[in-house]
Length: 480
Image (tube, rainbow, N blue to C red; front, side, top):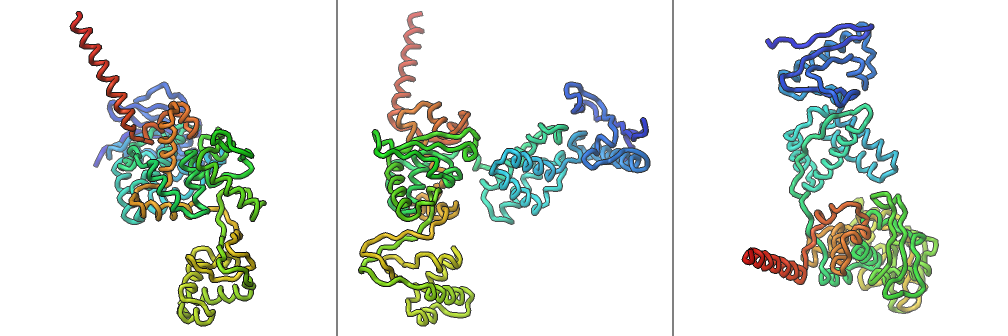
C-alpha cells in the first residue's frame, strides 16, 4: 500500500492541509501569483470555498481528510495537482461563460446554454476542469459525431466555446482554473476557401426566389454576417431618391447587431441597391408597417382575369382535410374528391401544414407552380403580397443549399457570401484596412481564414517583382 503523504492540522479553529508536491513541481497561490511554492498549504475553507465549507469542527476535519485523500490520489495517479481548479467542473466554467454573455447581452448566450445541454447529455459537464485531457476530448469528439451524427465542424464549435470558458475562468476572481487544455480541433478549422466567383454568382442569383434573392445579393455585396443581415431594418437604411454613381444609400447598423459591438456603417451599391429599391416598393404598397427588410410573403399571378375570393369557411375546410390527411385518417385522393381539387393540391395543404402550421392554410398562398388554385378579386397579372413573416435562418439556408447543389457546388455554405464580398473588395483594389472595416474585423485573422485565391494578374505581378529582386542581387554580387 502506498505511503500516505501530507498532513492536516488546526490553526485558529480552522483545519489546514499541508502537502509536499512532487520533485520539480511548483504551485502558484492565486493571491500571490508571482511566488512559487514547492508544497500546498491551505485551509479547507479556502480550498472548498465554492461549496461554502466553514472549515471548523468535525465538518472541517471531514473535508481535511477528503482533501488529503484526493491529493494523494492525484499524486500517485500522476494527475496534475492544482489548488485552484480542483473542484471546478466544466459546468461551473460554462455557467460563468453564460453569465458573462448575459451581462454583455450577447446573442451567444443562447448558443452557450445549448452547448451546456450537449455537455450534460454526453456526461462531461460534471468533469473536473483539471482532469480534462486531450485524449478525453478526442473520445468526446468521436462520441458526438457517432451518436449525434454531427460534422467535425460542429464539434469544433463545441470546443471553441469550451476553450472560451476556460479562458474566462482564468480571468475570474478568484481564478476558477489556471490553464487551458489543448483541445483536438478537427480538420474543418483550417482555412476556408469556398466563395462565389462572379460567374457562379451570376448563375445563383437568378435561381433564387423573389423573397430570398435580395438577402443573397446583400450578403455577397456587403459581407455582413448572416445573423446580422436577418435583423436588418428599414429604419437603419437611408435610401436616396436617385443613385449616385451606382451608390443608392447608406446603412447604419447599431452596436448590438455587430459581433464586435462597434456598430457598422456601410453603403448600398450595385445589384443590392436595385434589389433593395424593388423590395422597398413592394413593402410600401403591401406591408408599410413592417420594419424588417427581409421577410417572407405570399404572392400570386392571376392569369385569367378577375374572379371571386375564397371565403374563410372554405379555408377552414381546407385545414380540416389537410389535418386528416396528415394524421393518416384520410387519403389525399379522398380529400381531393371532397374539396373538388387535385390530389397535388391536397398534398400542398399537407406540406404547408407540416412546415408552417395552420396559419399557412387559413391566411397563406395555396398555389402550385404555374397553376392557380384559389380565386381572387384581382386583375389579370396582378401581384398580391400578404401574410408577411420574418425570414428565419433555416428558410434561407435550405433554399441556398438547394441552389448550390443544383449548380454542382454543394460544399458552399451561406457564410461563403462573406468571403465572396472579400473577393469583390480585393479585386476592386481596396487595401487590407479598408477590407477589415467593410467586414467589421479588428484583426488580420480574416485574411488567414478567409483564403481567397489571387487572380493571375496578381500572381504575374508578384513573379515579376521576385525576378527583378534576383537580377538585382546577382548584379550586386558580380560587382563586388
